[in-house]
Image 1: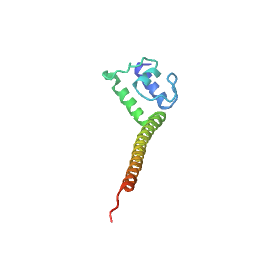
Image 2 (image 1 turned 180 degrees about the vertical axis):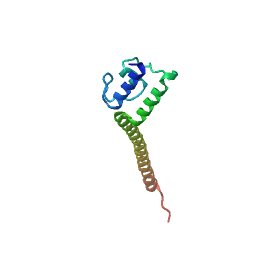
Image 3 (image 1 turned 60 degrees about the vertical axis):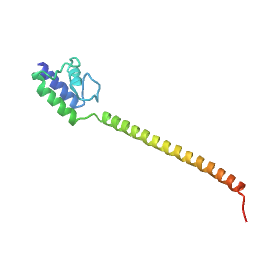
Length: 122
């Protein structure tokens, strides 16, 4: 069996979710195909003409069979980031509110002091 055929067989196993070497659920990319074919990471070189069809097949498969675990992790990370942004906005709003309450309290005390010391003329 040729090296190219080994790569294509490995790609097929990854697509079917039945790898022999890499962990089940691994993403589909040049390195996982190479490892699944029993070769070294990085052995599928983009600049080699013989690999053009293979790389295209890998890219097509990667696009079609995106790893749902990765998608879920990405969504979770984005949601956590968004949550942190909203928390920061909320904390800033609370800080402004407390500052304004403090300022109002201080102004009321000053107003009361002015009213108490005010001399009324008749």
